[in-house]
Length: 140
Ligand code: HEC
Image (cartoon, rainbow, N blue to C red; front, side, top):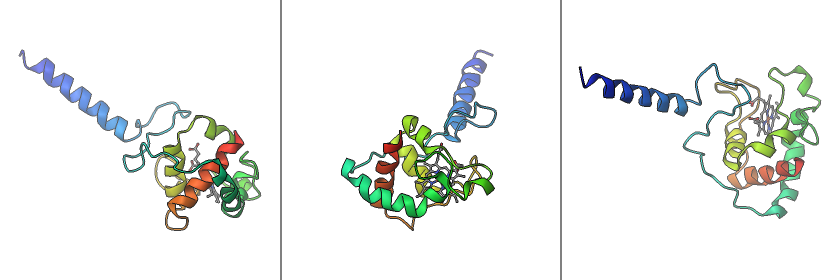
């Protein structure tokens, strides 16, 4: 009987870890961001603020139609979308560089997002994604 309690504890800790790895599972507050996958977690922007100029050009070509000219989610294509484009001007204040890079690279076709946010991986280089990250950070 004595060994049962530690076993329960181990099972509990393991399931908590698994849930955390899956982004917290369902039923959590929607304002909480899912955890950044290991492949992207901890990435930091290697570029300086001068990268924003190149990022602006890419943003206007590839992002503004949905996210709007200043990231307020009010681009011309936004009306027909469900879920709606994120308000990047609010998101960049709290999201880490690794979160932003991940979301831009992988888009929203996977759970829990299931959105029309297009993946940029394979279209933009890592450097170009960082340029866009640098630019959208100027929205906050
Ligand atoms: C076809 C419309 C569309 C285009 C184009 C688009 N997005 Fe999105 N984006 C969305 C939608 C819809 C969401 C909200 C759902 C989600 O998080 O996937 C979103 C979410 C995001 C998020 C995550 C915000 C959060 O709170 O988690 C980031 C960051 C982002 N977009 C950046 C960009 C950037 C940068 C570009 C251009 C390279 C871009 N998007 C192009 C539709 C678009």
